Image (cartoon, rainbow, N blue to C red):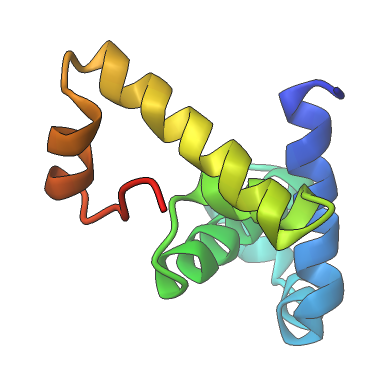
Length: 111
């Protein structure tokens, strides 16, 4: 398995390929806007990309990490299995039973 950063970068690349409008907006950012924020154009562009990525995740009813999994998984079955495992780990860390966690987050229980 590749490091999480690699998967996230792959997800961002795939996101841009699937959303040419976002790529075009990023390619035409005003360098003065970056300068006004005290950032390089690359830093400013990266922030806008992450904002667009998070907005897409929210639009799909996902967390950004879930969209990363979705865009880097080989199939929807693999995505759902990995997603469920991470959610189970979160439930355990939060001290919640799986049933409580599913109810709290409107997450479907085991099929």
